[in-house]
Amino acid sequence: MEHMEINHSVSEFILLGFSSQPGMQMLFFLVFLAIYLAILFGNSLIFALIRIDSRLHMPMYFFLANLSLLDISYTTTTVPQMLLHLLSKKKSISYTGCIIQMYIFLFLGITECILYAVMAYDRYVAICHPLHYTLIMSRSVCVKMAASSWVGGFFFAMVHTGVTMRLPYCGPDEINHFFCEVPAILKLACEDTRVTEVVLFVMGVILLMTPVFLILVSYVFILAAILRISSAEGRFKAFSTCTAHITMVTLFYGAAMFMYMRPVSSYSPERDKYFSLFYSVVSALLNPLIYSLRNKDVKGALVKLMGKK
Image 1 (cartoon, rainbow, N blue to C red):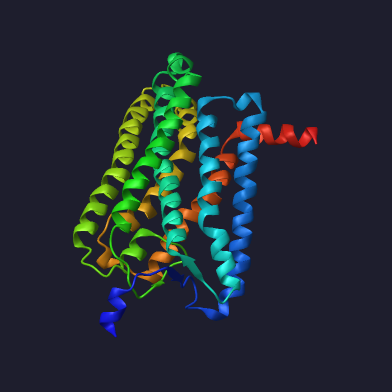
Image 2: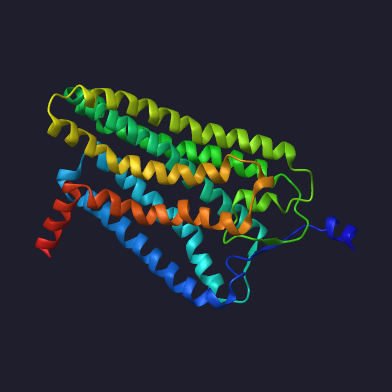
């Protein structure tokens, strides 16, 4: 029987999701639906405000609009399917559908990693070279930097997905997760995954630590520039423009590093589902709150829009 199972290919996977708590399915559905609607509303509002208010036509907000678009896409890749599975008995996803979901999720996630580094560079130029800010961060430069983030995500996600899915998957077909994430999928491979794990670990280190290193370097220069400002009010004002970015970077990279910079052997399905939920859903929910609540320009644009209404 075991021999037969190893020789047939899996045509679909069963996503177990949060089925270990059957009595909580409806509660989970309502909570995640509310979170998803809040993510759509909050990020769409930020995106719309940046588009329509001329005062927000600045590099920092251009990158923030990209981040909002990423967060909407990111959560839409996983949450609607999760909501559907919470209500239905059939919780399957086709093999091809699983590959597509994995690729899109990685594409958007890697793009976000790179974009945070780009946003750190923007803050570096704004604080360390304020007189040349508009010259250095011209419209064409901003577009090229944002496009490079998306292109980088597209390319690296293709490599990451290709390395993962080259392994044979022949059963069991149950993924103890709410979407097709790499560590959960690797557990189902019916071949030795050690070489693949090493390759993916190295890729994870490069893709996560390179942006983190660039962000840290940017903030070393930013901190040095802030300390040179003579007035306490000036130092506070300069630093306050970075706090939202620092908060989001800490939340996003902290959870992502935990998921992708460790061996699959240490994977714990029940615990790691919640970590995935945190960096893929909760960070997208917090993003518009953190940026809008701490930003007088965004609040001003919202008040102006409400006044027009």
